[in-house]
Length: 230
Image 1 (spheres, rainbow, N blue to C red):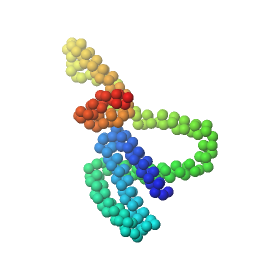
Image 2: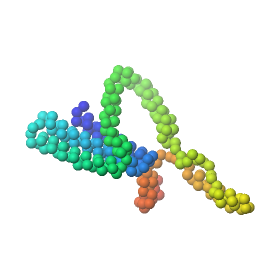
Image 3: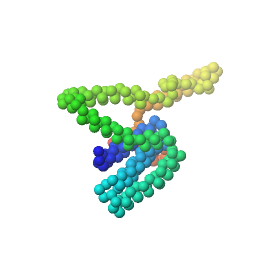
Image 4: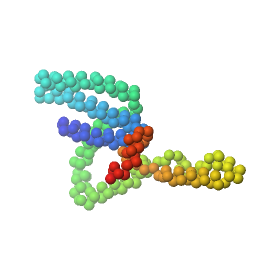
């Protein structure tokens, strides 16, 4: 595991942080999603500075003026990065920042585990036959299809989804003989409940429209969402 391994870790972490930030923005708040993204960037910058210091001190050109400058740059860059991290901890959610900060280490752990699994005898025996490998992939996809919607995508705004509540004015109108007005009010409530429908996993335009509900450009994107994706 050399420097090319760290380069792969950085690329994988950026993709993981982007997906985690979008999911957190949807199921938590947009600020929490921003905290996850900034935490990952904070951790990656810290690792890049550490890499500069370690390669300058232990590399083949250690002791040269260029190596000393690289080490000084790495150490000097950690000081403002430390201050920026302190500001982020005060302004954003520490839990979300921590989740983003540990993302590179999670990627390293998963890459190490995958390396051990791929080089094992059981994995080689399993992938020797294309049919067994295809069956394994199908089993994983089937398990994800049944588990993910049940845990993540099934949510409702209220525990009484599908029921229509009639306002007290409608009950009063029914008691005083104003049945048509009460029926019209109940019918409008049914239409509103029908318009809401089941909650679906939103795309990036929907997330932006919910994060900036009063912005004109967000309304424009949401209105022409189908055209944009087409």
